[in-house]
Amino acid sequence: MEFKSKLLNQAVTQMSSLPGVGKRTALRLVLHLLNKDQHEVEQFSNSFIKLKESIKFCNTCFNISDKEICDICSHPKRDSSIICIVQDIRDVIAIESTGQFFGKYHVLGGVISPMEGIGPEDLNISSLLTRIEKNSVKELIFGLPATMEGDTTNFFIYRKILDKEIKMSLISRGIGIGNQLEYIDEITLGKSIMNRSPYEINFSS
Image (cartoon, rainbow, N blue to C red; front, side, top):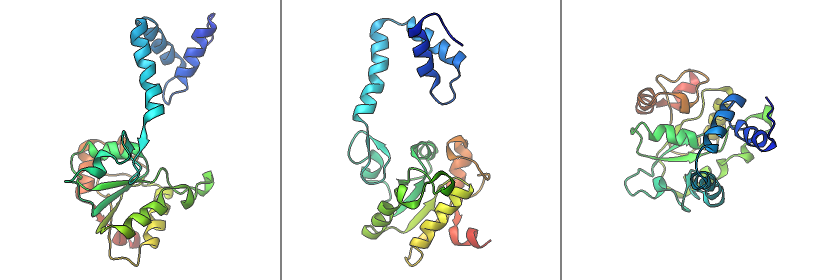
């Protein structure tokens, strides 16, 4: 799909580089922006520039944040003794939308995947272990994807903290094999968190 205007081509190409946006959808979005006045388009583009320039990642849990420490980690009513380990920020958003979890998070930034060249050292695992050492953590909830890579990452962390008196749980009921948390409906995900099962039992079964 090519257009006579080089500027239009460039804009559509950039828009279609976004996940899930094809050329036809990109064209529709670009033409929509083209019909907006100059100020609106500037506000739109500046919001992304400011996001890229100013957004931070929480020094504690690596969640996205406007400050050095995110609102979840700094909230006085969140339970610091319970940490839910997730793959990325989208999982934090998904779990928070359920309103059923009142602990804190640790965003790994991915999962162990030898096929893709991702090892434990590429993830936020060492900071998790340091966090466990320095804080009175009573429970870790594994909220990683139900995939081979997610299970491998769970087991790696499990082995690292096996000698500590920490309860280890796995998000359970209603989450199918291979499902990503961001695509699970809020009710099912909320029940899965509330009905989590001990990790040791799940591993041995």
